[in-house]
Image (cartoon, rainbow, N blue to C red; front, side, top):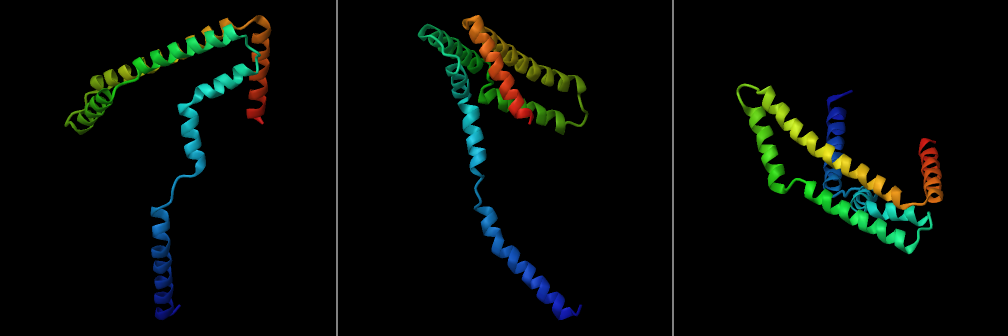
Length: 156
């Protein structure tokens, strides 16, 4: 290639990049991302949809709602506050930036975080247990069938 051809190709590449740069800056995440955020925030709608398929009585519906409400309150109390998260980040930053790495302090930080996750997981298991205890044996069997069908669909 000659020098003028190379210059022309470079100019065309730079022009293309500068034309596409504003598009990349103003690009928004796709709708799927926002949808997933809403699903995570409103996961109880999926739960209620699942229970609608089980033909619950009015009393069972109320019990399920009460159990879920108590679970949400418990999860809220387990959730670290903004100050807790900031303090954790500062501790991690201090460990990373210190001259000598303190493995014991790092392990303690990780243990604190894993204890919180363990408490949240136990609360979720308790929720599932308490909700299943509200169901009749027939409803429990139907729930198991629905779960198996969902698993089969997701495995495909």
